[in-house]
Image (cartoon, rainbow, N blue to C red; front, side, top):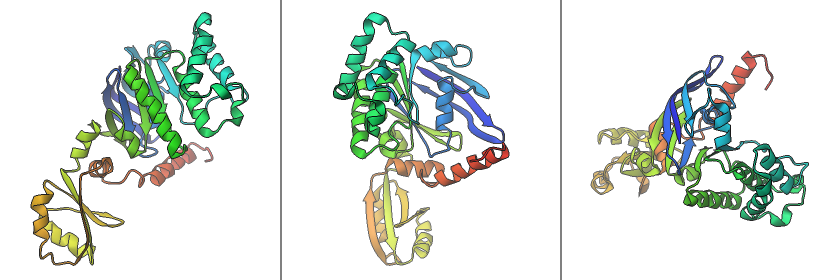
Length: 321
């Protein structure tokens, strides 16, 4: 449903997307995972024809995003990262306006709006101005609006940012419901690792580069079969001792963390360990472990640096940030 080949986008000296290639299959939830500033939103803007690529090609529902932008737009629904509903209109008026703009046949509009309001549980609030809605209600309205014209592809740019945990879960219930229906392919960007776990496949993007792609299980295997978390009286000395076992531990706020093929075979090696062990935990790897193993840093660690880089680029353009 989506084909991306060697996609590039630059902003002056900043290479926001650097030769990214991937495909998205029909009917799946595909997650684009990375820290803020990694290139996620730039990619989704290119795929939704809001931004022209500097190089490479991209096709959505069989249409080239540069040569056939109108056909691409007819095939997609888009949920922006920032709120995009008109808060001076009611919930129903927002949906009716969208239906008219997207050419939903007049005889079908009322029924589709009714169905959409029922699906997002806003029937009782349809006559209220959107400015009176909570953040979760607005987000649900935006999802319904994006689906009203029955697109083949739904783009979601950080769809749950700023929502409380209960509303986030409700949003995911709706996404899983859409997947079960099989009528729409979902492409979403996120920096939430728990959301990436819910996707059929995940692509990790970092610094504009596609680092890895696969199912969450396949990506977790990149972090080793099992993980050992170790806290000692002297983590520097412990790291040096572990090197003799061929282990290269990563530093964490709690101590040391490293991958092993078999915890059952490795843990006996710690008998008589030269540094007193204060805490020892053996666990299966998480998607966060995979992200760290593949990129060399945590997903949160790069956010401040990415924002600083964008600020410097803006300053070079003469804009204030």
